[in-house]
Image (cartoon, rainbow, N blue to C red):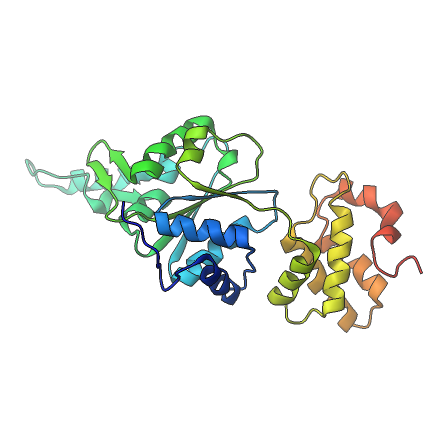
Amino acid sequence: MALRTTIAGISSPEALAEALKSAMYLADDGIATAGYLALALGKPLLLEGAPGVGKTEAAKAIAGILGRQLIRLQCFEGIDAAAALYEWNYPRQMLAIRQAQDGANIDIYRDEFLIERPMLTALRRPESTVLLIDEIDRSDHEFEAFLLEFLSDFSISIPERGTLRAAERPVVILTSNRTRDLHEALRRRCVYHYIAYPDPAREAAIIMLRSSAVAESTARAVVAAVGILRNEPLSKPPGVAEAVDWAEAATALAHTGASWPEAFRRSIGAAIKDEEDLAHLRPRLAQFIPGMAA
């Protein structure tokens, strides 16, 4: 496997971090290094972390700076090869057989009868796509095992067509919320990085980068509040995306004339999206909403 030290003009982790910033993604050294190495080595990038820390956004940003289409394979319990790889268009095949003249040979396994799913698309057009295999931990162990051939050799087997192998290795990014342990064989095929919640300064910078309408003081206040919320026993603690949403929502209400404590309180639905979590927090809103206790 050839080592590529420069990919789409990106020659270092620092250059990747700068490029990601231009795509509105503020990467720390850890994710910039892992992302660069995955591109340089031609290996899949496995990103783990709590929901909302920016794993999917990282994939979108990498696709953006590479100028490639992002193809998303959303995993779920029971996902199989037909949903991920390909299906034959049986109605069209039957119609072609009926329309054929007597004795005519019909190849019903031509491309026109093949319905491409995300993995096959990425394999056939590796130079123009980034394949995001999102929330791989939601899939079954059987599907995870099915991925191994694809992630090691970047080839797939179609019984009617034989083995298809990518002309070059596609860019593949997997994400996991760690709802279950992934198999070691899958981990060995990837460059790994765990994305933690950003520190307060970085999270405030992310909010201001993603939303120019939010003042720095608002961003810092929201970051302080979500930092407290994440230590509460919530079923759905706010992620970075929710912090950005809350800052924007509070700013929008403040522009309508609401006072800041009220703007924060009324817009909490942008950060907390579970009734039981809200019920748990309501008696103590003053503890984490800036200015509400005054």
